[in-house]
Length: 372
Image (cartoon, rainbow, N blue to C red; front, side, top):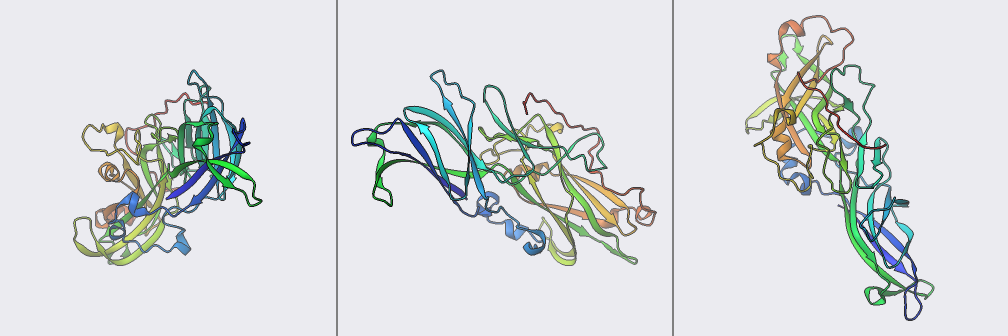
């Protein structure tokens, strides 16, 4: 788990704290235990032989720095425009005024693809990614870049008092006296990892392997972003997030199917970073299948490469699987390769190639007043 300790440090004379103090941010980062997010059985469910030297880390990695957005709260409970401070993984200091209330949003600052936006009233702080125009097989809905890993926390109504009794007396290395006020908070994920493993049954015939690879794996109708204040994911901008570089097929493996059956088959995998399901706090919300509309159902699209070079798209509804794992985890999809028509496998490659994990009669709905 990513943890930081924020300590406010105000220099004082004998009887009072100075009117101007400092917020001292000490950042300590620890490995997020995937068992805490995904459940203790995820390693048993996950059957792809993942090589981190080839495919990168399977879980979260340590962020290199932290950003603090500091908001001043006035007597009318209005939030000021924020001031930003960036810190390394060791932390840093920011000057604050005592006898003042603050809101503070902390998140890692080493992201590449994430866009941040707010409104004039500073009622939210929204994170999303750009649409991915590089994908040539997009039809009536929009593919978005996977977000980077994002951790954060939002501290509300932090009052920096000038009462010396609220502070702990400490000494600097040079022996000078100072006073600190400790605030502890944990940076927890805003983005969630899904490990999608696709099991291919009956993939051998008299001519060899029917499916030889995978062009991409998409999750449709996922949240398009998150509000860093509330941790609630976007429920109006539903997007498709695609892993365009899935891991290769591992052939003729002993596999255990979701129903417990033992068999021999092929398996491929894709690690997908997402904002999670729409309209929930993935760390708190327990979702159920009841009441979910067709618009909110989530589908996986898999672009299978056939032995003749054609790309064959398969779609599966994975809503139940995602609901059971709102904070990420293992998603298993089983495909019977024998059901792919022989006429497609034996025919000529499709012109242009590329897979389109489209869902019929569905379009992205983007309803947003966000100012970027």
